[in-house]
Image 1 (cartoon, rainbow, N blue to C red):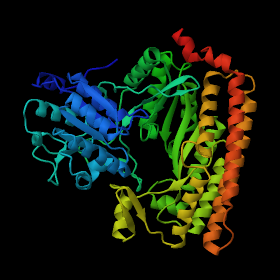
Image 2 (cartoon, helix red, strand yellow):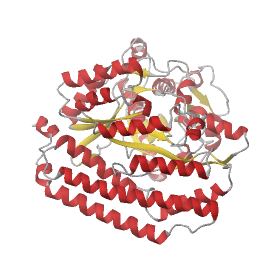
Image 3 (cartoon, rainbow, N blue to C red):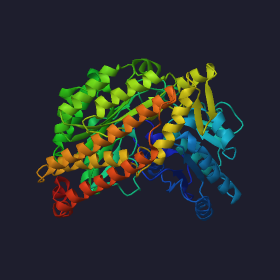
Image 4 (cartoon, helix red, strand yellow):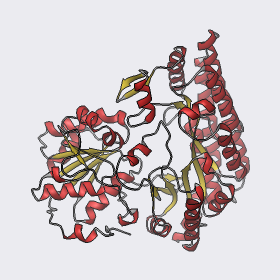
Length: 548
């Protein structure tokens, strides 16, 4: 396990004076693996600091109690989504009210791209940590522990200042393999007994979607926007996690997994070769995120043979005008072609989709619904969709502000539609999907269907010989197709209701249907798993046999 920081600056950091008798407290969402906090913690630990990682959902008084007991040198908050900032503010205020007077900083996309707003929302902060924070946080801890001036630390914007102090803006890390592997302190999620872990092969995104702050985040700091880890180092980490931590499912969290274009395809084939050389190809399953224009059937078949089982694509829209506004650089037909390719080669896929965006009309809604029917009509994936939100740091938010269409605030970014009737459609859509238990929420029907499909993909990967597996697949597909017909039909009816005044969808019927389909799904899934529980519980998966 790599626990050291390497590279050209390693000796300089190792020789620096520091006092490590007080811990660093890191706070962020931990219900799912938080690789950002993990990397911050591992770098600090590599240089002798004790690091405590706490979930931001803890009661404010509990967090304040930890701070009072541990007396941390520094507290760092990791903000993933900007609309949670007031929850973070409550935590920071509780810390100050309880008497903590040490340095508190906050990092993430929103604080990095709009530090003035972050400091205004949480005035109790001492600073904002901009962009990649591993070395910034280490420098800050070193300065604080030795009585140095934190204003000399590169990468910080301090309260009361609009720009970085004399430390300046910190460059992005040049070589990701210099970093120690991330700390992993959350019990891995299991999919039918197969333990899963998040992993990174790269950082940055070369695309320029107008609704996304990721590319803005990486382009706002000096340095190369996209950096790839060496395939050998990625597989070395996978092998360690597999053999020592019993991980068999790897969820790559790269914003855009490197498979697009000739150079990245060469990298991907090197990764495949390393997986095969390490003897992992038949023992693991892994998931990636990519765009439709990166779906190459030949390469993906090679990746599938090495364990790829799930592809997430940001399709976003089936309307050509909306795709232009969103800056996707792909067509609706390219999106459909990618879906057809994944179905043909037998790879499970999920997708992101925005039924509504600032350019929406009733015609575009219907185009999107027709597109979704083509994608989901066979029941291979549950229909899911949302409305585009204009986050800080995105080109589309800047455009909406310039047009006078931006509404709301940091926690509720919104915009005026071009057709006022769409405001009512959007409100009713959200209410209907929430009330009926269809798309939103962990117990909703569409997420439950997609989770069942994820389980199926894992079963097919690790237990391909299970009796009745194909029959189970057909049953899932029938249920999913039925659910998709209902929810997409309801959206069609709702659109007509707001456009022409026709009858609205039957909310009670929607709720009853969702409840019935959820129960049928539960019965189908539980019956199949129960029938094969001896095989699963006996650890007859490929991964478990390796451990034995």
